[in-house]
Length: 330
Image (cartoon, rainbow, N blue to C red; front, side):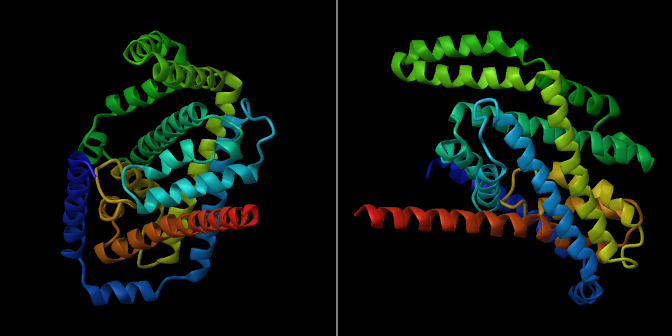
């Protein structure tokens, strides 16, 4: 393992430990367990259903991105790799799941690594855009001051959102930069550089196709549906703890705040960082500390456990299938 990777893991563990300490220092364990016992399982079930709907929208969005290069691609063939990548990201560092999605499933997806990487880039931009819009809407609806609560001005929030929209709708603006990069790669290593340039050109063509207004509108609608479903997860879990959670609608603020906190360097699964800032969002709207802590832990469990189990089972059956094929060939 490289020194830079060791440093990054160490920093992540320190950051996670710091936020876990802050959380533990503010709650009483017996109060925590008492609040947990009051959880309504019907609302947890509703949260899981909303979670499944959200991931179905994510899979449909990714399939739409890949259809131009792989017209026969099915929903099922997209579902496994996407869930597997989320599972790996939840347990391994360095966004290992994204690397796997880009390089390990090309035959199944009927496409190339360059196109998958382009789709991942668009996926990240769409998700960040939705989270920023949800944060802006929540701060406006709950009448919270942008700068004092989020640490940024409303102008910065709007500017960043507009920049993302510009990148999504007008990728042609970045073509001169890409051409320069291709030229440098070919000069450094003609053989490898040519292969990389070919993949980069495929990725750019994919971005140009996805930037088509009709296609991008569909992708934005799928993104909106996915994040509204995730917001419903946050709301349902707040309702599961009602009346301990006095103001369940605060879940709509906890979603963008907790999600943006995952950008802070931390551990796989965002232990500590996600929970601390989710608690802060809930208490900012009048909920008390212990129920807000239970809420954050339940939300984290619902968001982490299902894709990790589903993706892990998919990878397990994939490995078993490959083992059977090898035995059959022998």
